[in-house]
Image (tube, rainbow, N blue to C red):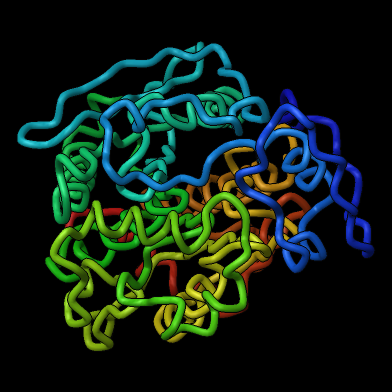
Length: 402
């Protein structure tokens, strides 16, 4: 299986609330952890918040300064350091850039499967270096390609620039897959606002009858409905004390990304509200929705799962109890998130290799293995019985030119 993705396992959460540490007399508390959040958050996070994070200001970006975008985050101390990989940047015409990470040995002749990734940051923060430690780790350990899609960000580039950039990047990657060393198995994914962009891209391509990815991977999806407020949505009221990315931060991001406000009828601004008829008769790709248990956007993520389950054979939802919105970026504290992502990718790549290659060469199924076997290995995510032999043809069509 190769080197492990994981850091040492963290201690399990205690059911009792952790009392706050005594504040330093020389440091001003700027983000005190709410007692309700303290009862639900994991012990490692509580200790980090009390010892460090509570002394940092809330993330409110008015007035905006461009240096905010790449300002070092206090969370970075818990992020993974980069793995050795090769990396090549490509300029996308009339859009932004992509960075293609490859394992040190490079791709085989027939190419590698790929994770196409959109980083988060509220459509405002981040750049092409975002999530580098996590992405290079996945690239080298999973022996897959990883493509970082660097979209332009607000407020310099408000809606719909980020959406257009990701759409252009996906089309560029698809059209140039052979040149880039990719085999056509694309898992499109992202975290936070990047997860929202990944979802919008799939919906757009369905609407325009274009090829869609093999699977969709969403991690702590945010900004799924930009019309929600604390007053209008019980999910936000229930999680209003979630740390670091709370209501004030969410509204600050929204004002920069949508300076004219959100329109309820515009599903590209609010992908949770995509029109029902958009997916009628469509085989939506297998979707994996990873949600954090103490996250302002938790209920939106659950609502998305319920909507997609009406249209997709496979929608796997995983909630990580006690973890905050930014858990993926704190991989050394919360290695279970990256481990789950690696299991998802391992399963998708294995199933794609079997289903697509077998169809392409018209090889029969192995007589000693049922189709079900290929979706229920010890290292895989559980798959429902609905994805069986009669769906293999539809699966192949998703991989090919419409």
